[in-house]
Length: 198
Ligand code: HEM
Image (cartoon, rainbow, N blue to C red; front, side):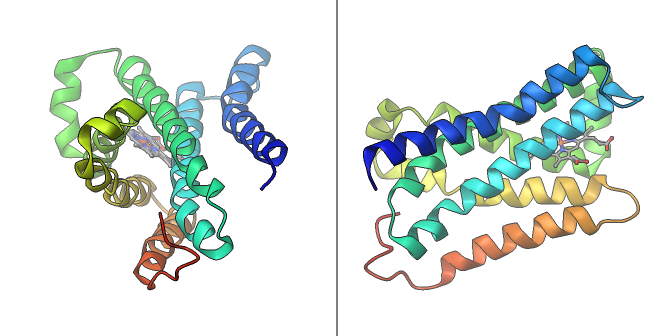
């Protein structure tokens, strides 16, 4: 792929990833949030986090399909943006939902399995974000690749979090769970020489 196309794709990625945040800020200032703004922002940031995580999982299958190594380069920024939104999501939950009442949070979190799953996904995303700089790749060597495979359980926990927190019609979270499951299953298909290297 030509360097100009590559640069354009990266710019498009950054703009698309920042757009949901810009929209939240815009809606906050223009009264565009719902009647329950905290819930609205929590849901929007959680939704963006899972979308970006899912798209990052699609990078390897996309590379296998096309042979374009560029898809692998998109995986890191996508994963970091997912972590970024998950962090805002968690901060809103802790700060605005619970008013930084750590005692209450400590009492509440083990009672709700959707919070346990969300926390598990977040802890993994945090460890992947901390070890994502190139310096860490060199330092950790083979262990880095093993650690970064933890993105698979992270996506399963994120899907479980979504499925469990929705009461009533679970179609939307089940669609995400199915897409994530499909993207994980695709990895079991033997790799051809064209798609190797991811
Ligand atoms: C400790 C970590 C986490 C906590 C405490 C947490 C908490 C919450 C809460 C309170 C909601 C809103 C429930 C409602 O009122 O409808 C929610 C929704 C959601 N969260 Fe999380 N979350 C966590 C981590 C994550 C992570 C890591 C992801 C994804 C990578 C994620 C994705 C979502 C999604 C997709 C929704 C539903 C959004 C929608 O309705 O469209 N959460 N979370």
